[in-house]
Image (cartoon, rainbow, N blue to C red; front, top):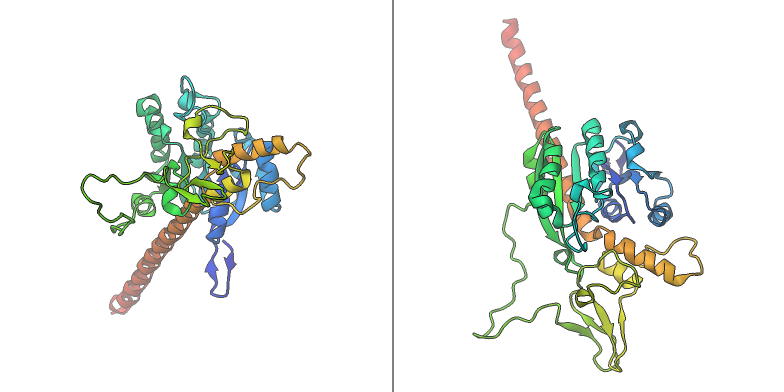
Amino acid sequence: MTRSGNNQRPRLRAASFFSGIGGFDLGFAKAKYEITIQCETDPFCNAILEKHWPDVRRYEDIRELKNGNIPFSDVWTAGFPCQDLSLARMGRRDGLKGKKSGLFHEFARLIGEGRPRIVVIENVPGLLSSHRGRDFEIVIRALADVGYGVAWRVLNSKDFGVPQSRQRVFIVGSYRDWRSAAEILFEPQRRKGNTEENRPNGEKPVSPFKESVGDSLKGPVVQRLAYCLYACSARHTGTDWSRTYVSYPAGRVRRLTPAECERIQGFPKDWTLPPDPCSDTEEIDSLRYKTLGNAVTVNVAQWLAVRVRNSLAKVAAASELKRSLATRVIAEARPAMRG
């Protein structure tokens, strides 16, 4: 484990699987973790990862990845493919039997071999209902069978400082320690929250999806809260009822730009702009929309990273206290043993 900073605190390390454009990675890097490895099959995503983490070793196929290739890492993160689990999918959901979402089994294989201290997994809420909950049971059992205490929770990105309603299920596994898994995902105390003031009887609150912000005279005007970004291209025309649009007084309407999508996912401006963009701007934008729709919201990842850090520090402090007490007991017992 490396050390950094003047106070010589240990720097935690995170390994990234199904990395996408680095939502988990950026969130954990913001919390001062070192990213040790990335695994991603999509060429465009790999170009973005190379742009931001040029010195990190990357692998393209998790099926060929061996535990020996993975440097020691305190935390493993994975937003495994959701295509076969998502409720937004038209038609039958193949779940963990699907070609893409089924790659979870390869990740489970690596967990069984490597046994990292903490595992953080993200997917769509459809995982909870896929095959009447049996797929979710497979995920939980895969962790429990190799010694992990497990907790899960649905988190919404809008509660973490971004204007997007995006629900995702997060699963935390803590090796041989169920308490830490629960402490990472759940706060022990009730927060004040942001409930609005009481309104007169009969007056209903306005949905944040229907509230608008912007210049009503000159434009642009946009909803206060965006609908969930889907992994779709600029050419996508389905489920338009649930899309977020930007409007102008003259009647012009447009969809969010890739840069605007980056911001409501917590990424810096131009994060998904490739280092060597081709002349086909429409094609590049299509790839940016798709990968942003697949990404983990950075703000949520950073919140989790901080809570993982705090949990590991608490466990380390408890272990140090036990060692100190044991040393003291032995030291005090030696004179009596000599007598």
